[in-house]
Length: 76
Image 1 (cartoon, rainbow, N blue to C red):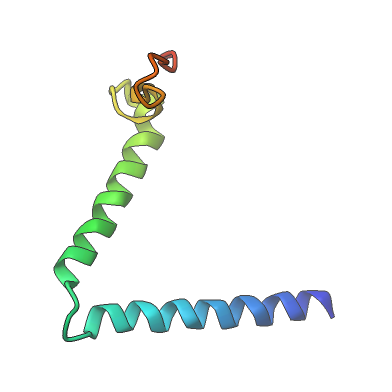
Image 2 (image 1 turned 90 degrees about the vertical axis):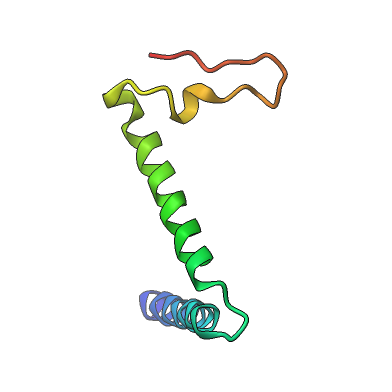
């Protein structure tokens, strides 16, 4: 009973998200290029952050400054 309830709730929520995505992409006032570009940029930044410990690049969590408070996360 519990698993089927969770599956049903997740299915409904995914359907709502899917309809929202389609509505954003096909609306007359949609900025489809901007939406796709923002999504790709976010994915690219996430990938860069995930790979930064391996590649040694300066991006990722090591560039966090604590909101200007002078706090730096150490680079490993």
